[in-house]
Amino acid sequence: MELEGADSAVQNVKKLLDVFRSNSDKIVHIQHISNRPNATFFLPNTKGVEIHDLIKPVDGEAVFQKNFPNSFRETGLLEYLNKNNIDELVVTGMMTHMCVDTTTREAFDLGLKCTLAYDACATRNLSFNSKEVKAEDVQTAYMAALNGLFAKVISTDEIIAEIR
Image 1 (cartoon, rainbow, N blue to C red):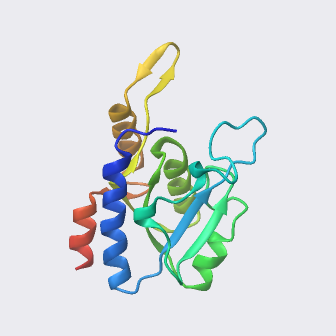
Image 2: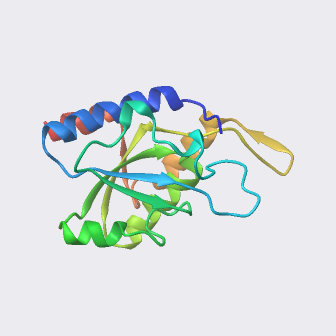
């Protein structure tokens, strides 16, 4: 599924990964594989489920496969975080309006502190009630809704500046 802004989002994820790797921080990758009947994307054993080459996991980085938008649902993610005493997350990802939103809200509900890199996420045009909503507006609306209560929503460069 094509998303608007995916290429620049991946570049920003890579920038964050480079910083976290240089700091020896724990990194978790989430891979979505659909198990829904009649699914048309994220199908097992297809290119659509592969993690982008620029941000592929390296040895020692955790990878969890999920079948739902929520990265915590029926995965070992929460157990991994608890085992490693991780209570703060930097969230990035693809589809802002689904997986990023759902996972960020769940993380908040679980008591985790989230920082969301708004420019390291991407979405697509949506429609509702015969109205088209442009991807830029979808992105803005979701980031505005998550900012404050559920996460601190800032840019990749701002996150990197805070780390350094």
